[in-house]
Image (cartoon, rainbow, N blue to C red):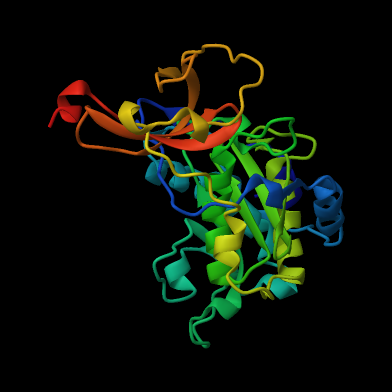
Amino acid sequence: MEPAVVQLARPLTSLARNGGTQHASIHNDRVALTYMQHWSSFLQETRTFFLSVHITHQVPIKDESEIYVVGSELGLSGRFVRNLCDPVMQALMPLDQMSSVRFADIQALTPSGRTVPDVTFGLVNPSFPRSTTGLYMVGEFETPWTVDVDEMRINCPNPAPRLETLIGQVVGQMRMARVRYAFLTTYDFTVFVKRANDFSFLLSEPFGYDSQSPPLREMFVGFCLMAMADPKYSESHPDIETRLRGAPAPRVSHRVNNHHPRELPPLSTPRPITSTSVVVECGADMPVVADCVQQVSLSDSPDKAVWLADIRGTRRVLKCWSFEVDSL
């Protein structure tokens, strides 16, 4: 046995990985960047909750080595539960208010529908019917080899457009569970989310698995206690889902014979050509440079694809296909 506080103070072990899935998950949910803000007081708030409880008990010594090799989100979720969720619950379970609270699959807490979080935190009590009432927090896993830490960061001059779909999926789960708190993790990095109001979501910095000041396990203890103190959120505006997506981008065809120059944003400063750029001939004096941001559909055919692109600061959807497909 060892003191629970000693176990909480240790950083997580790095993943053992080989290969891995090639494509990131594609989600339809989206929250516009304008509705996200930096949660600047996150560390102070979670530290206050962590220090509000006295964790003095002993827990079984945990083997911190990693011998299981992951290559998918399923494998990653198992390592996250083993290395973070279990030690956090070992520390919390002896507390009076935590006797029936657990990290769990959503199906253990409530009948699941179309929206299924990867992990939930809530009341597991066989004496009560399963419902969303006992849900306090939801969590979403993404693999670190398909999601870069810079795509998870809101506190920067130009947040990545992909953050809209990453947080969009998390917010969809929060709305389903009617909760105020959630987290998004790749195991390597974790972002904590708080819903401040209908149109404001606070995002922490991405914290690494090996964070030490404070350790990630201590952050989660404080975050769990915070979620239990004020778990539920009720929306007050109609049609929230549509409004959270933000203003829709103009829909245009990108076939050369239908792509008119007047549909493009006004020309500003020249844009550099990068490895993700494509040049579109559209009948204007100068070709248009489109920066491909994210592939939003996966096709069985290598001859066509749909990409989210940036053209002079305006988001567009590019439908791309080979000459062979175009001639059909």
